[in-house]
Amino acid sequence: MSEVASARAAGQSPVIRVADLHKRHGELEVLRGITLEVQRGDVAVIIGPSGGGKSTFLRCLNGLERFDEGRVTIHGTTLLPQMERSLEARALREVRAHVGMVFQQFHLFPHMTVLENIVEAPIHVAHVPPEEARTRARTLLERVGLAAKAERRPGVLSGGEQQRVAIARALAMNPEVILFDEPTSSLDPRMTGEVLSVMSDLAQEGLTMLVVTHAMAFARKAAKHVHVFHEGRVVESGPPEQVLEDPRERVTREFLRLAWG
Amino acid sequence: MSAPEKAGRKARPRRTSSRVLSTTLKYLCSASAFLISGILLAVIGYFVSIGGSAINWQLFSELPQARGMEGYPGGMLNAILGTCVLLVLASVVGIPVGILTGIFLSEYGSESRIAAPARFVCDVLAGVPSIVVGILGYELLVVPIGHYNGYAGAFALAIVMIPIVARSTEEMLRLVPNTIREASIALGATRAHTIMKVVLPAATGGVVTGVMLAMARVASETAPLLFTALGSRLLTLDPSQPLPSLTVHIFNQATGPYREEQTQAWAGMLILILLVFVLNLAVRFSLRKSTLKLG
Ligand SMILES: Nc1ncnc2c1ncn2[C@@H]1O[C@H](COP(=O)(O)OP(=O)(O)OP(=O)(O)O)[C@@H](O)[C@H]1O
Ligand SMILES: [Mg+2]
Image (cartoon, rainbow over all chains, first blue to last red; front, side, top):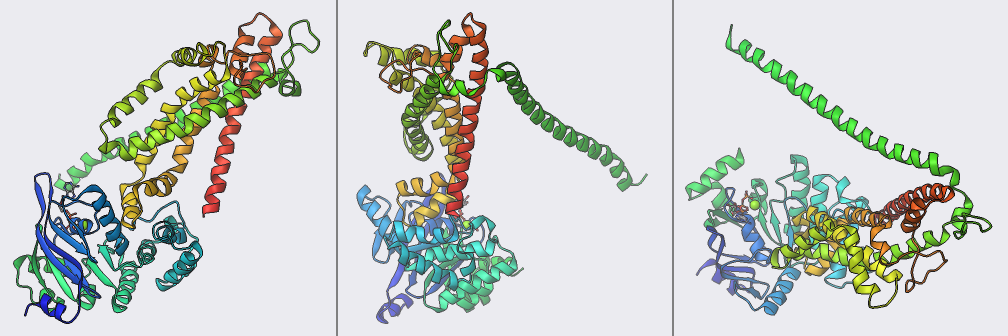
């Protein structure tokens, strides 16, 4: 029995199901048929050399980018390359309501305080009563260790603090899954540690996560599956102890040699 | 001579010359900054030296008097109020239309075929001599109504304002990184919400500065008003009638034959500069306050 089939037999359902995803930028075929599933409660890590299409893949998952072939199903909502406009708008709204995203460069709203950054979407998108949203935001800030910074502007926070605010902002929408695109790549080692420890906690609490990262120790510890992207394909997939310690593909071996330094 | 020594000898003069260059550039920049401040101070100083003596409370509290009447030459209260009325009316139309146009050009421009022509029209409009805009106001709002009126003046001023506000808004919105828009979209916000609550507020400072410049510019416009609002010696706030304005009042006094009125024209210019200055400060202050409230 295949792994997927056994998972289904066990009553699990994939939160993310991607089938044969293709994406072109003009002549360049950035994604060449990606098929991948992420089960509820799992942490999946994507690694691979630069330019392999990792960011593009994540952006296709929540409709920041259109794709050319294949299908993406997230929490029961399907995105297709050619959709009727109103259907697409509805599908994107559904998908984005269930998917959080954390970027390498944080992308906090610079003119709002930390607290306002977090409550903006719950109040205006999910229509949570403002008081309730603020209470919950404070709880989330406590959880990422930043209760004292609620009234600050993002500009005065360190990179690690900004990234933890970004995580709290994503969590505030109660997403089914959070996509992380190299969340620690622009941070120094100490700040990286702060952010990864928050992410590990979330993994432990059963949040579904899809993480593009070069932080191998995190992948080793938290990931259920590791997928290696290379030139728009998944060249290798499997549990971290296999992919990271006994890789089958030459690309993976090379990438890991560089990643571990 | 060994190779490193040679390299060192060769590198040194270049380093010196680049240092000279950077020092020169720095001094040129500061000199220019001083020059521009100097010019401003000189202009204001000149106005004060000539018109300063004519500045008095009367200027702000009385109407102009005809020569030979008691209290001649009187004040320019009507002109000050008229300029305020024109400015408010022009802003009520010009600022929203300008900002919305700027939003269109920046946020929807890439997917719309009329964006490039619209941008071109804006640039042309910004370059059209304002007297031409005055004639437009005359044809559209004076001829049909049958007499000169304030609405026509405000309309002409709004036309001057719109391209300035639109283009500066566009430039400021373009400075907001795309990633911020994506972060908002990724949180499930609509395009409109993202623009109004994230992009525009992130660019507030720049957008307001553009609006300010446009207001200062139209507050000091004379030509578009000559064929439209015309001017008046009466105290009136009614834009359906000929409406006085500071600039036209100054123009009439300065070009007139009487020494008292010419002196008063200088004082009027001082008041105009003061008005622009106060406008500037008021906006900056309110901006600071609203930022504090957010923070
Ligand atoms: N808007 C675009 N237009 C054209 N090409 C693009 C665009 N966005 C991405 N690409 C190209 O697509 C390829 C994949 O990019 P992507 O950012 O997904 O790679 P990545 O795996 O995330 O790399 P990295 O590890 O450096 O972040 C790259 O060759 C990139 O140049
Ligand atoms: Mg990337």
